[in-house]
Length: 405
Image 1 (cartoon, rainbow, N blue to C red):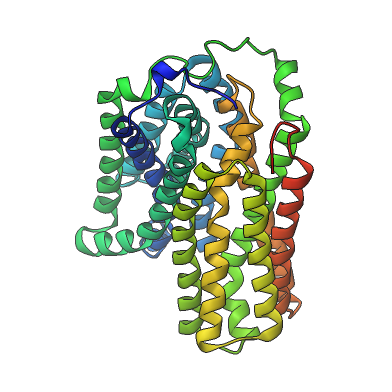
Image 2 (spheres, rainbow, N blue to C red):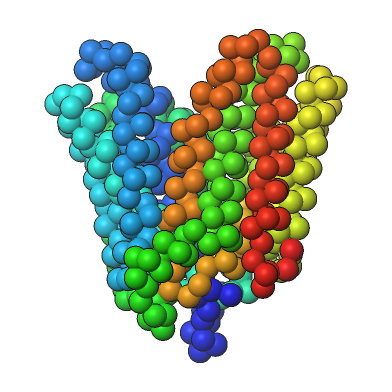
């Protein structure tokens, strides 16, 4: 097990809760800021005389800079500790969102979006390094599940919060207020420095790695397959979330409202599954088996939806079970990565494999758009199922010898 904790440093339950609360709050805003801009495009486009392509480029700029430096940030975390990169990252991303409320031009908005992406790059390397080194290993699965759940809540809340607050106080003041909230989280982390650790909690006892050693680690079988795992699950998730409603309308012959409610049911069940998956991850060492079972169940149900073409109650039942099964996986996924990570390398490894999420997210729209352009909405379900099965294969093929699955 990587980044193990000496018994004298095992946290109490109350301390663990405070740590995951702080980490979860930051992760909430990481996801919140990624989805808070699109609902404001309706204001940004006329305010700056933009096309929607230019407005969407703000999101691309944020994602690009985040992906570009996430792996190097992981190396910084392992070398100097996770606390300061995390606090600075939260402050930079939040401050960038705040300043967007005062942006005089599109160019300034674009620069601030890119800067926000730099701040966003710290979360996975720093969060997982802190959790792996500061929390009781017996509660690690639940901690990982709450961390993932907090990000999902950020995604879920962002569109509604943006719409309601911009209607109440205007889009500029809404961005300022969102930024202030994130800065409060950064300040709270700073005040609780003793909880999160200010030194190098993961790597003090680990030998320093050369560039060659780091490259060898990243290209090792377990880590490389973890990276591929993240690529494939991002492709499956982004593709399904983006194209399910359109594909369901055409292939299942249901209306927009029913398709939207079915996807909401999937999301909700997935969130519940994440919390349940954390409980499971702490009660078994067979994390690979959990991941494979969850993904295979989801894949089977998606194929069933494609071929049976259910409507009404049956569609909702199948979507709920598929979402719950998919939600069981992330905590075990994180435990798989942690098990494959040598001491002192948590930041680098989680930074590297998390880039796979960005890679998969960039690749997917083109593939699924091509499927829809070809007039084959049924293949959206098959393609997503196939990607979940590929993810299962990466778990099996990349399994470390020391890991029971």
